[in-house]
Image (cartoon, rainbow, N blue to C red; front, side, top):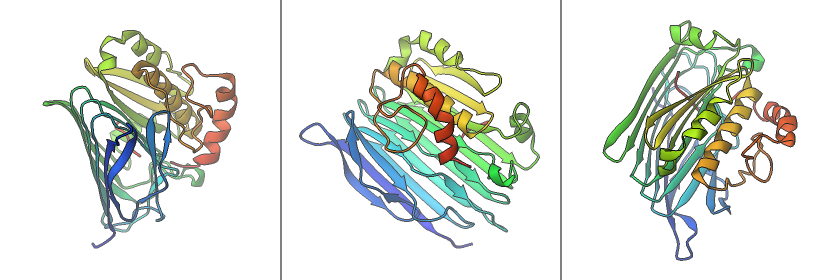
Length: 308
C-alpha cells in the first residue's frame, strides 16, 4: 500500500564560536523544524508535525548525527498518533550517531496508537566512547479519554544500542491485542502509560548512589520504576505509571537526576512538560508537585515508544 514517505536528516556540529549549529538539515512531512533556539549551551530543536499522524502505508526515515563538542536536544510539542487502519501498517526507521564528546538528548512526546492501528519502529543508537546519550521515549495505551486501552492491533518496537564496538542493548517487543505482554502492563494499572530511558555517559561509571536515588522514585500507587546497569557507562530505566500525569512527573524526576549525574544544566524546552520553568529540579519542588499534574493533563489527554 502506498503512503507518505517522509524523512528527517540532521547533522549537528559546533561553529567557530563553540555554539552548536545544524550543519545539515533536510526534512519532509510528517516533520517540520520550528526555529531552533540556544539555551544553557544546548541547541534545542522542536520537531513539529504538519500532519495529523501516520496512516497505513506511511514510512518515515530518520538520521541524526552529533559531532564532537555539539549538544543537541530533540523534542516535539505534540504527541505522535498512529491512526486506525483497515490493513497495512505505518513504519518508522531511525538511526542516531553520537561522536566522542558529543551529546544528544531526545525527548519526544507520547506515541499514541489508536484503535485498529499497526505500527513498526526500528531504532539504532550508535554512541562512540566518550559520547553522551539520553534517550527518552514513551507510550500511551491509546486514546484513553475515548475509552481506548490497548485496542490497537499491533505495536512492534525494536531498539539496538551500540557503544563503540559493543552491542550493549537489544530490545524487542511486540504488543498485540490481548497478548501476555499487554496483560502484564495491565496488572497494576487499568490505563498504564509506559516509558523507556537509556543513558550513556562516562559519568555513570562512578555514580552508584544515583542508581539508588532513581530506584527510590518507585511508587506503588503512581509509577513503578526500575533501573538496570547494562554496562559501566550505560543505564536503562523503565517506568510504568497509572496515567499520563503520573508518567510525565516520573520522567521529569528521572531526567532531573540523570542531568545531575551528567553534571549538565538542562535547557528550556519552551513547552509544557511538568518541570519547573527555569530547569528540571534535582529534587521535586513545591511548585513542581503542585503544578505538574495540571500541566500534564492539559498537554496530554493521550500521548514515542518504549519496551515492555
